[in-house]
Image 1 (tube, rainbow, N blue to C red):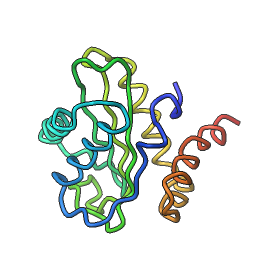
Image 2: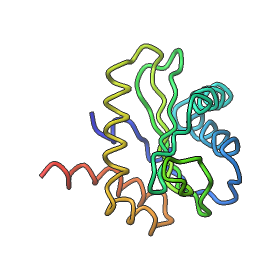
Image 3: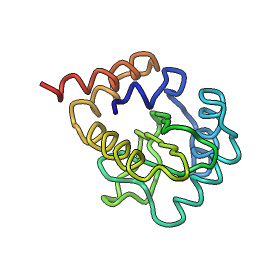
Length: 154
């Protein structure tokens, strides 16, 4: 599994004026609807339900919201860089500006965990995070994320 099998270029965005997790989850729902054909409201509700179990802010300005959806055939993702960091109740209490959301099929135990581990490793890399924060172009952000795997494989 690699990021290019999870993430499409159209699912990478830079957003401004996000003032709440709810608004962010609505935007993520819209992104996965336009990029993968998922229902925006269903994706939003699934993210909200998962977040109610505990915050998905993993620290260092990164959040990894994730949810399982019925009818989905494979794991898909969306990446958002938030221009003004958002309080996400992260473990280190730092606001979040890099968000990689994952959506997995309802019964995809191992694939969901593998995707979450892959994204977590990628986003924890300080060099990658710095490059993501330094760029505003979604195509460049996509390239940084996809090419990040080649640098770890060596």
